[in-house]
Amino acid sequence: MKSTSVRRRLAGTAATALMVGAGVLAAAPMAAAKANVLTIDKVSFHKPDVQVKVTYSCDPGMDHELVANARTLGTGSHREGNAAGTIKKDKLVCDAGDHTAQVTMRPAQGSYFVKGDKVKVSVFYFDDDGFSYAREATVVVL
Image (cartoon, rainbow, N blue to C red; front, top):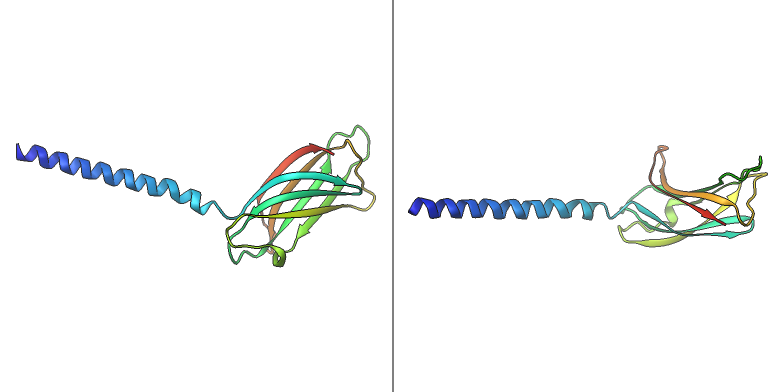
């Protein structure tokens, strides 16, 4: 009889340890994934520029820029609008908290947008080595 209760206690202890361990592992990726995230909140047209409001989070000591690009989709003509904008690394608040920024994308030479254009906007981080990551994109009508 004594061995059965010992086995139950050991089994209960092992099950508890597994549950606690699984809980720690499940929570860890969420905490680690908090920083270096981008979310597009709003895209607006301020002729001739396109602006994007972004919620961002980055790790302390991060050494890269936030970049935004816009391009027209399916205009049915040969006209193509392209625009780009950046927020330099010294203007980003990198403390793993959420912050908002507005990026003004200026059209490339000879490029332009008009009200009603269908536009793909993408935002991402770009580091000194040429790598980009945390890319987010959306399609809107200006």
